Length: 148
Image (tube, rainbow, N blue to C red; front, side):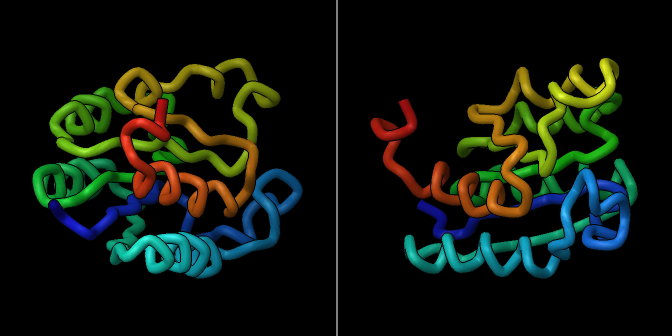
């Protein structure tokens, strides 16, 4: 079994800490990566952490990683609501898939409440800020019985 967890981040998350901090907080993407990495290391896993503003790059990454990782965490950002391509790629991932959002989508605009990803995710974590990344890693490293 693989001891690597993939974390993929969608568009504009490279601006985390600068863009709309009243919604997304002041923490940066490297800080989110550090929290996820610490959680992975505690459980004896490595982390493959990536960000892209391009849908096709994210689809390519999912396809590349689908058979080789213990699980995949994805914050699809703006692609959450629009990307059937990311949805379809995620259906091929062998391990658990966790969807993460920094803010609570249900407290935002109506159109943000619809996720193309949630129907293929084993778990959805939202509204926890960057701590959500560590929670997602904890979910993947837990036993199937603990996941419910």
